[in-house]
Image (cartoon, rainbow, N blue to C red; front, side):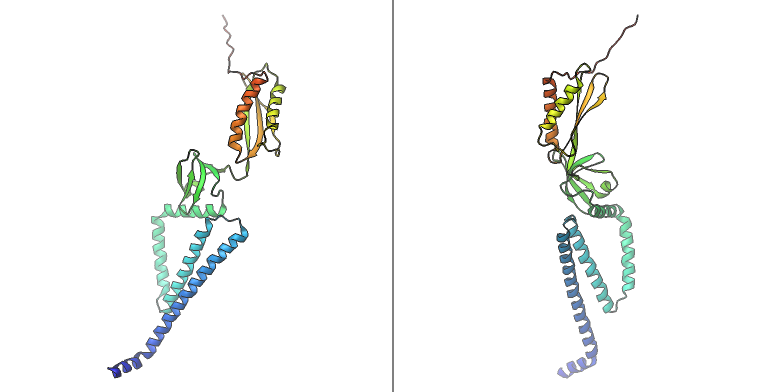
Length: 272
């Protein structure tokens, strides 16, 4: 038996050594791929920390993509090492990918739109946005959908392709917003008195920004009233509460100054 094993070894020694060498080389390639994938992910995270500008949602997506690419390249090298015709495999994978692409074109369009949204960043998590008839605060951005929370707390999940193809208004992006408050007074009232009331209100409101400077203007001459308007800027966080409070103050102080907020009226003349 021992002689037979020795003879078998001597007969196949070169083949066994060659296969063992290829297996060890393949294991080495896998280890190197693992190291390169980890190094790529760490480099990406460190680059993000230094830049401090990229959206955090990009980190897991890009790092996962880098890992897959490294392992795919390693797999092709290993197959080529064992004499497999990798050209035919790559062509087969390409054909399969094309067929899958046609079958999942809507899903792939959402992925493409998600990537563009993450890179171009028209909004980020926490921004208050609107597109089409949808309005809400962005909760999550991923490759397929964007999740929002409406003003009244509803969960909204939108396909990324819907956002990418729509005009997006970002109410948070610039950090401040202008509020316009219009109040009507009678034609018999003093315009200067009305404007002074608005100036006094805006000068005593600490949440109103002084730059850009607030404005009080005669906005329009209506059919039954003179429309005065207060234009002032606030931070995004203060916008809603400031607008509601100023609406209340404008109504009360216009009336306290003896001015009239008129009802719509018509003058009818009967000709006999």
